[in-house]
Amino acid sequence: MTETIFELVSQYGVYVIFASAFLSCLAIPIPTSLMMLTGGAFIASGDLSVWHVSTAAFLGAVFGDQAGYVIGRIWGTPITMRLQRAPSRAAVLGRARKLIDRRGTLGVFLSTWAVAPLGPWVNFIAGATGLSWVRFTMGDVLGEVFWVTIYVGLGYVFFDQIADVADIMSNLIGFVVALVMAVAAALWIKAILRAKTPEKKSDQDIK
Image 1 (cartoon, rainbow, N blue to C red):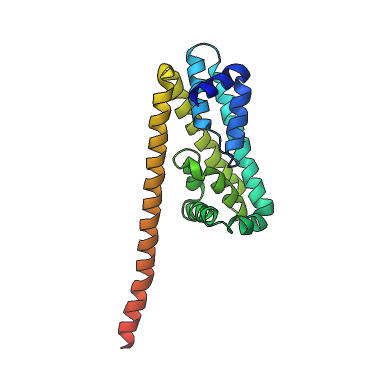
Image 2 (cartoon, rainbow, N blue to C red; image 1 turned 90 degrees about the vertical axis):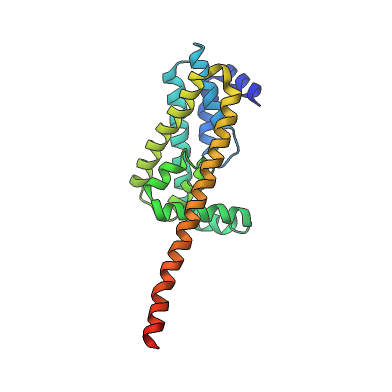
């Protein structure tokens, strides 16, 4: 896959970087992180400029996130009902909803890089649940700046070891996602226990 990505970036330059960033934010499975690393490598080799790569990646990601938000804002209810028919999609939407409900703007920020697989669904749920556009955009823009800086920077520094870096970052993202899900589950259990405690106390008082 790495060779294919290199060929695409070599042939189409920042256009393919923009397109991949945009489409990946709409839940289309594209290895955009590897594309970012490759863009950084081409910057290091002098074939592309840091300004062009960073701008293309940032604008593609932000436009894609905004498109997902607008889709959720306008057609959120019917699309959600259809997606929830599949158990796997329902589970992903549920995790995205919890992230938005509990973290709001911070949740959007984290979804752009720390829990990137949830990103497209967070965009959609943010729009569908009525998170304000200003709050969404604040988290989105800051997060995408962070994401572009990390991946393009790593590609630039380790341009001769892109495949190894891509593998490491893939494993790291998987670890972060698992960690965030574990924390969310722990908070959910804690909330349930807190809710039950007053009930037990009230029952004792009645007795």
